[in-house]
Length: 307
Image (cartoon, rainbow, N blue to C red):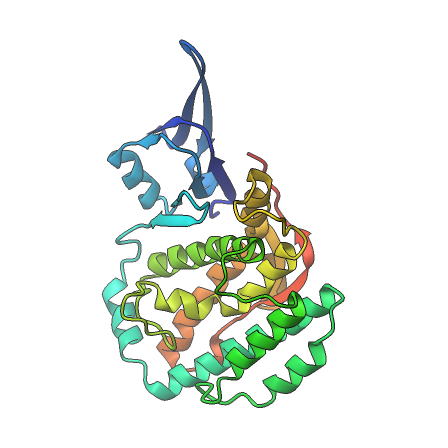
């Protein structure tokens, strides 16, 4: 079973790994320390928010060997880095060759399918929130073509966010974007981790191709999941650009919300893994019908772990 706990560390701490346990040691008073241990097999993601959190390179290696992602948070309360396993899949070279040899037609068809699901989930998100605009998004979706040469995705996103929050400009530094960006980053980091573990080169995308972006493929595959962050973020927007601990926790736990994928209800975290494994099959067999993408569901926690 893959890990399921999302552990956020906010206080000065020392992290140690012994006997397949992560031990968090914190000083709670002069000469008095508190220790908490968590089995490595339970951990999915560690988010280091506070200052002065220390761990050894050996501990980092063990976390990576166990496919546990570690995210550090910067001064702006946004994820600043992620530690991932370097060699998590014995078929790295073979998968990389298949990824690099994809023809443009296959890439275009995969991107069309991904964007179709993104717009569909955005439309359903508006419905869940009781906001108008669903009909217009479905109409836009009818005009999608392979590779999206008419930028239906961009036009739909612009319309969607104006419905979601009138006046919202995604490039601005404001409380709404802070919430959205933090939630997207949590999901994106999970996609990056699972891509690396599956043997992909995340810098090589099917649509995104930024020369200075090491995670183009993650930015392709996150698109259908964004609305699942939006439906949660809509309810927790505040007047502050710096997110509170409770806001960050709520957004991190989006990974435990329900989605519908591969004809069954699952967590978003497990759904991401299902998508990536199916993406691998779709590339291997040059068949876009093998790609499994998620449908948004009303907010529901399948597994809630409190740390």
